[in-house]
Amino acid sequence: MEAVVFVFSLLDCCALIFLSVYFIITLSDLECDYINARSCCSKLNKWVIPELIGHTIVTVLMLISLHWFIFLLNLPVATWNIYRNTQSRAAEVTHERSHDQARLSLALLLHVSL
Image (cartoon, rainbow, N blue to C red; front, side, top):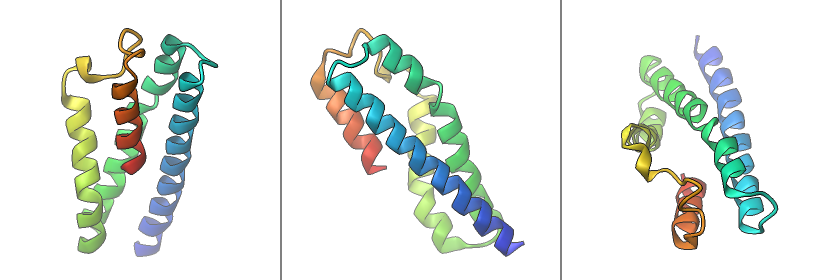
């Protein structure tokens, strides 16, 4: 059971890292004006919920399998993801706010640091 949990956790973390790199590349394309803001938002918004589900599954698996230290390491990020997605959708980066570079840079910084 323990090996299955860690193999699944490894695969899930690889997928989350790939997703983070995809977010960075897409936001960088937006910053360089290779894509417009509407297409950038449509590309990124469809991956927000799978990211939330992936991180929450790993956190719950670590809780169920009684790996407390790893669970406590994952808990703040999972809590932040749940909090961020349960708030109003006005906080998302939308095409109306895309010209506000300070908010875009802050969103990129927060996403990269998490």
